[in-house]
Image (cartoon, rainbow, N blue to C red; front, side, top):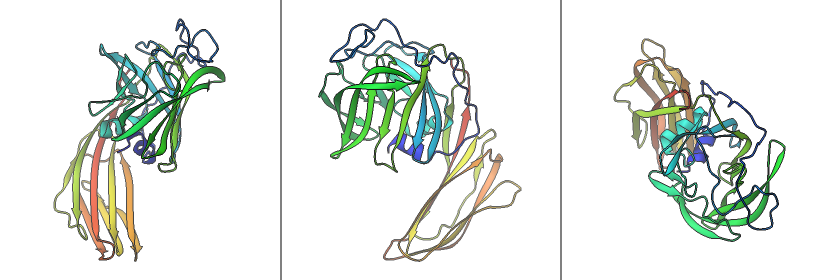
Length: 330
């Protein structure tokens, strides 16, 4: 599953703390980075090896596309010896990292800036970044072939800087375009193409000495039921005190769907969700988030029709609890 794509396609505003980083530098550079490769200009650029990072370094990205917008600040929050530990101040990113393992959150290997998903390195770069250099890597659960396109220009906060463009293909199509800018020390843009309309991250600013908060998430499934036809809820579930939200995912298929689900909080009235009527080739998928759900024992109700032969009848309900905290960046 494509972690970044899912995070943005399903992104909904979360109540939480998003503290803007201090000391905005308008793209102020990192000094002393040595020479450069290829037909670039300026004495700060190096494409032979990654620029050095430090704890407290941060990058603020603008998110667009896929029905999402906002900012996501990535922060170097720890030094693990061979890798840096990168956090985020975006609640949605933290949630999907806990759920799916976002490759640019968590360990980033110092030697080559490789990310990690489920213990497997994601090779965004291979050094030196020579034109037409190619390699393969597992990224978001699929094999992608990466190629260094060549010299590029990045613009961050009105400042122009040297960069190298790269693209990753899968199954014969370009899936991701991104870059590397030595003055930034990482990418200034990442564009996922043709997935849910596509989405992108664009660097707005970067700097050092971050002293704001980050977002951390814990996630657990609290209810799951599926059937070849209407659901017949069998049990209740418990929401923990302090949960940030309860996420409901519903999938219904069939020749006919006229259905209603209800979530019943402790000592409360059911919260109804109605689907249909649909009378042919029905395929319904819905995601809802209930903010600050009442803690305690909840129940599920269901009524209606999910039937079919031409389109097989299936109903599935998944309820997931998420708790998001905002500790200071360590």
